[in-house]
Length: 295
Image 1 (cartoon, rainbow, N blue to C red):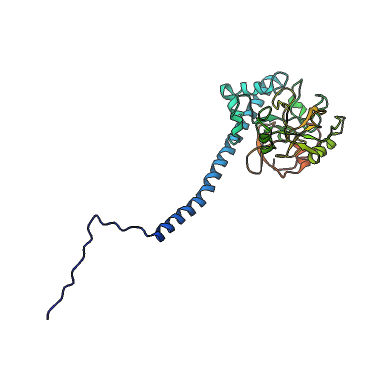
Image 2 (cartoon, helix red, strand yellow; image 1 turned 90 degrees about the vertical axis):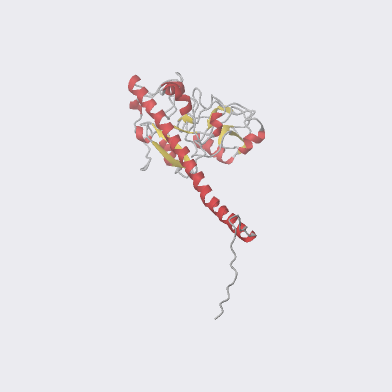
């Protein structure tokens, strides 16, 4: 029997099979899908790392405050430059600890800080009237915190901002960094705070500051008039405003809320949706108000 042999074809070692357009499109689609899956995870991991660093910063600040109170019998006071006293207790890196890694603006200027002292829920007109951790002319003693150090705010995050914006557009793009003018002045009489809060919520007229607010100097700080990440206010329109009374809410770039340092040194993340009455209770030292559990 005669056997026929078909010729065999051998591909050379240098032969390359090219991708077809369909295969290339599929590969690109798979890469795009992987990126779509991985990118949010990477961003979330970075955001989580920044939040953890922020918490660690506040814990160091809290430890410095507690150490100061142990050594002097009082907490750092403002008339002796409270922020500098706190920073001094952390050594040469104190100023850097006052910068939140999530807020790039806090690194623009050596004078900016991301964490401010709690001024409470009353007008700032006098130390006898103020009910927060932070007074203007005298220090707080540990015995003054009858609500409990574990239930009273000491410092919270506040988005950094220059004393005045570069231009109107900068302020309008960053409305929670700056203070809004309101349509009318609310007299700072005892008990008039509720009217001030209502005016800030409902009668804002402009976000353009045109005036400096030194948030971390004598007598200033953030307050517990409004829950976190709301718009802050001057008291009145530009020409006639009472610029000694302001509303400066806690604020941050962390998703959904802010980190809050308590007087005893622990830190909790407070959601934007926190009950307003609870938030106010956290801001007072001796009102006998109830904050509930979980803080």
